[in-house]
Amino acid sequence: MNYCKLISRMFFAAVVHAGFLQAAAQEQVPKPPRMTPEMTEFWEPQVPVVVPGKITANAAITAPSDATVLFDGKDLSAWTDKDGKPAKWEVKNGVFTVKKGAGDIQTRKLFGDFQLHIEWMVPGNITGKGQARGNSGIFLQGRYELQVLDNYNNRTYSNGQAGSIYKQTPPLKNALRPPGEWNVYDIIYTAPRFKEDKSLLYPACVTVIHNGVVIQNNTEIKGHTPYAGLPKYSYHGKGPVKLQDHGDPSEPISYRNIWIREI
Ligand code: MG
Image (tube, rainbow, N blue to C red; front, side):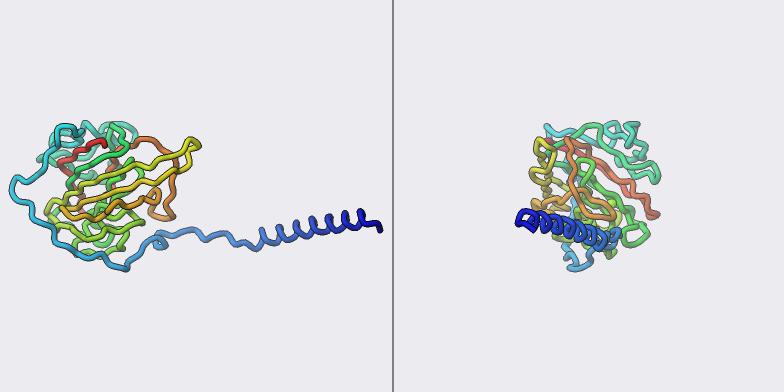
């Protein structure tokens, strides 16, 4: 056998061998298991409790002059359901309340970077436990959930309690007021940026002040916030503020005094 033929046969054998190896490798690599919700929940460390300051009479902060008012106690004209039809949640006595089964509602207007002021309350006679107790949520740009929940003396997983970026980052402190009292979120949000090819350039960041206490400090948002599975980014432009109808059996929660400033 001449040298060229030997090389040729060795090359052929190597290709065949590589093919077998590849086939064997493909057979041996197990499929990753389907993710369950529990895989992205962590309970330790617990978030320390801090008692927020009191709201004194008439201390509500109304919208500054350059804000877009999303709710001032009158109606839900700034909001729609997911299909763009008028929002069906109930407005009464200057607040609106989640209507179970009516679905999430979202702002007509879309936003990029913003400052959002929003107040929420669960009723004093709330029942339920864990995640099934006053569960709602504020979806930034319709995608990234800042959790709303009554976990005042109600243990749940740390990265699922009020003020968490859901299933990602727990709040720095548990600054909840008890059921029957209003909670205030002031949210400063920087939207993610995407490259021309629509891949991520840099992620979204958020700072949240809850009842006067910083609970998220320029926190990087790792992607969307699913119940099961890992966060990931997909390209988007401006988005609405969306409020969650979680549908749990406890008493529904109410919102009031909502305004937003584009920054
Ligand atoms: Mg929620």
